Length: 435
Image (cartoon, rainbow, N blue to C red):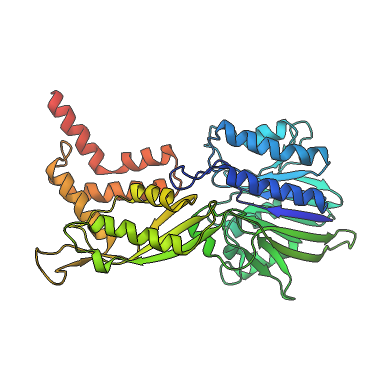
């Protein structure tokens, strides 16, 4: 049996604040589909995060449907699970269920909210269920188990109906969590003995968990497109895994071959500029930075479809030179005639200097500068009730921003706000004003 295993397709994702098209991700999926038909695969496994968000825009839903139609015509079954990104809220309905009802895939799902999981056989009318038997192999869908993955997967295995069929598990969890030392040995051994192959997702870099003989039994093939541009630095091939199983070798199942294949992605190049020579100028500092950045990018001789990650290094006096990151990125991309520029400022040493001072008087990490600036702004114009709590308000803002960057839902953000004592102070102050 030939299985093509992919994950983390993230259809609908737009990088660089939307300056890069989401078609990069649908094109990567289309290449995977083409390979599945060419090989040909007996089944395509999608181990979570088909979509970037649970609230799928129409364009991303169309991309998914257009990619899946050729597989249906080629009679190649598609088995998919939800990832953390495309998992709906508790009262929502997954778009994977919609695609299943349209006959474009089989949606495998296990409810881990219950104390004991109760996987049900796939309903052929809805193309959905906890497991399905195809070609002499049982495919089990675990979705996104969250914390305690090995324990939950062991409970899932124990709850499955008895079967002599070898089994393949689809689960959206980091491969490192199944590596020796990351989970208790007994639970890990039971899991390894129960499933001939575990199709993983969630980690965007490739990761293989070998058995005692060195054969990979759990594989995360890595994202076929760079979800975050920094992922371009991941070494080795990634994109999808081509797996050959021998189900006739009952009662076990022999893994004949597993190869992680390299996917073609939008090219990402790297350049670096030291700002120290002009990071302390009163006049012309910003223009000098732009000129140096453009020179570094042009030296790469990048193709028009490329993205350039430009690392800014050295010392920058934030009291004299202001860098508008978004504006500079757009300007450099246009002048260098590349698809996009992503500025990396993590290596900058920010400081505040005195007029005429030959050396900086205070070196600050970027997060400390951000904290100080926010605190100063809030102290000058604080919301009612927070006049004396600029530091706490600044910390709350940065916490919310990190949650947004990590993909937190609106409900989660509202819960974090409600849990903060600062919110209650604002409410009390406003009630007093309306008094």
